[in-house]
Image (cartoon, rainbow, N blue to C red; front, side):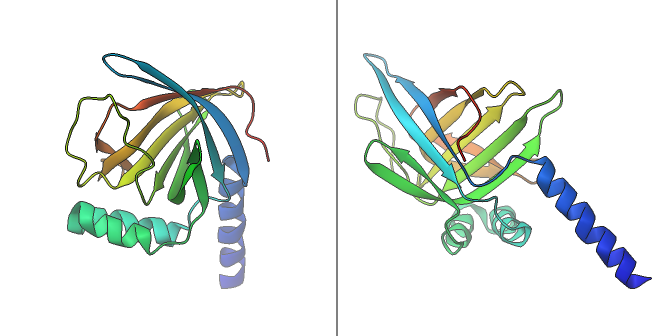
Length: 184
C-alpha cells in the first residue's frame, strides 16, 4: 500500500512540474528605463536552466522570514546557480526561480540574482548600500508574450503566500517586453 502511495506522490509531482513552463529556456527582452532627463533602451537576456528545488526555496524563504534580508542573502548565495540575467556585457547568476500559474491563464516567473546587475547613471541618487540583488518578474501570457519589470539593484521581502517579492530598489524598475515563446 505504501509503495502505491509513494508512486502516486511521484506521479502527482511530475504532473505539476510539467504543467509549468519548460526548462531550460532563454528569452531576449526589450528593456526601457526612464529617468527625469533621459530614456535608456537596452536588451536583457534571461537564461533559466531550471526552477529551484523546493528544499532550496524553503530554506531561502525561511531565512528571509526568520532572519530578514541579510539572512536571505547568505542563504541565497549558498545556493547553486540555475541561470543568468545579462545586460550588455554584464551577467549575474540566478539563484532563486519560482513560477506559478496566473488566474485567467498565463504564468508568472520570479527570478532573483545574487548580485546587483547595474546602477544607472542619471537617476536620482539613492543609497546603493543594501541593494544587493537583481529581481526580475515576468508574466507570460497564453499567446507567448512576456512583460515584466527588472530592478537592477534591489531588496526583497516575503508575501502572504510565502513567495519572495520586490521590496525596494535603488533606482526605478526597468520595463521588460518580449514576444514569442522562450527559446529552448
